[in-house]
Length: 337
Image 1 (cartoon, rainbow, N blue to C red):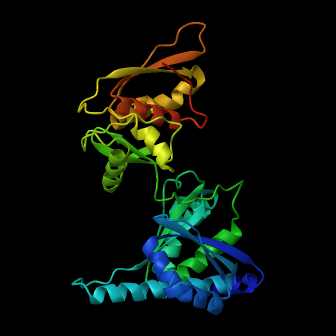
Image 2 (image 1 turned 90 degrees about the vertical axis):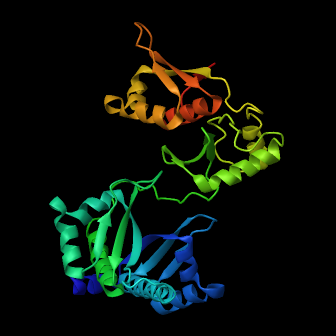
Image 3 (image 1 turned 45 degrees about the vertical axis):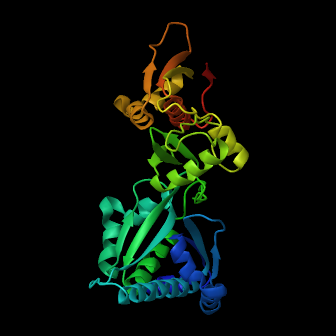
């Protein structure tokens, strides 16, 4: 297995992508970029780190296979060193394993898992590393996370075997790479809770709550804290500027602690209604639960190519429901007041 990699690997240039948290990236970069510079020089691999103030960053390692393995070895040992240092200041007795997350095109994950899980089992047993392939693709991409954990040596052996699989089974079709979202993901405020949108789901986001309140207070200074319920226009998704924030917050309900319920209507083409309802109503129930709005779908009428959806609730509930419905279809749906 190994000889095959080194023989064929001399002329084979591979690119491996890793997903890392900000703290891990900081450790790889080192003071004034010294650590990553040393890794580049000693391994001979190109190591690029994605830009941006994101909670997650992509580290791309490119080069001949032997250079990639050297770079991986240096990263794995650096992470182990970080674990050892953090343990000297803690009371933990058992040493946690080193963990790396690879980002792999979903079309290659089948070969990595093997028939009935045979390949992944073989990799686990022969390297001693734990390997897990995520069931879902990373948001807005056709890639999956492959998590490897164990000792640095086990991780290096594991990466070698994964590289062999990736060389033997190239990706099929076009790959949409995963790009981590900036820290300023859009925030929706509904029912006293802040939500961030990840993929097609609204995730409760408590630590964004204060930021949202601060924004709200700047834009509408007379609104009591905790009573801001901005309507969320689907097309105003990213909170990139204070002007957009103002548009968002300017629609808050002022001093009303419980804004009156209102109704909004959407028209959906018949052939797309299925992706809103989901299997046995799972998707529509999810949207109802997440948004807190009442959602009624009219029965199909003869001769009409469209169905009407009526959403009832507070402006914030309606906005969240509307956004979640639109997220089910890339082009969105037309709305009628």
